[in-house]
Image 1 (cartoon, rainbow, N blue to C red):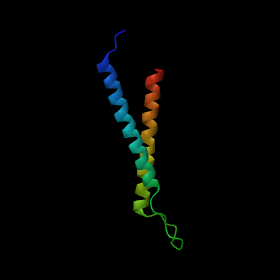
Image 2: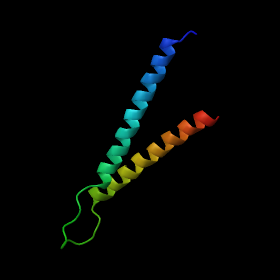
Image 3: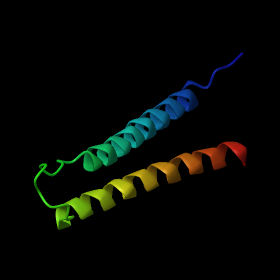
Image 4: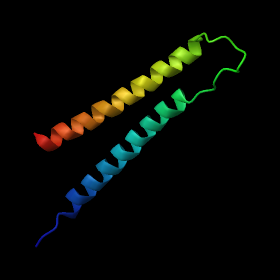
Length: 77
């Protein structure tokens, strides 16, 4: 039995980087959604930074979903 250690190291490195990147991207989306809530007496109007943060969070989640879908595509195809 002959193990190709270079290929094993490459697979390990790529999976480590992609996992850390995907978790970081998802965390960024969660942090953007968990922004400060308005005080109780404040009006419920969405400010520009809140809308931008929510849009950025949805973009992060969409990129995570695209990466997972691409990974499933690579496994199935």
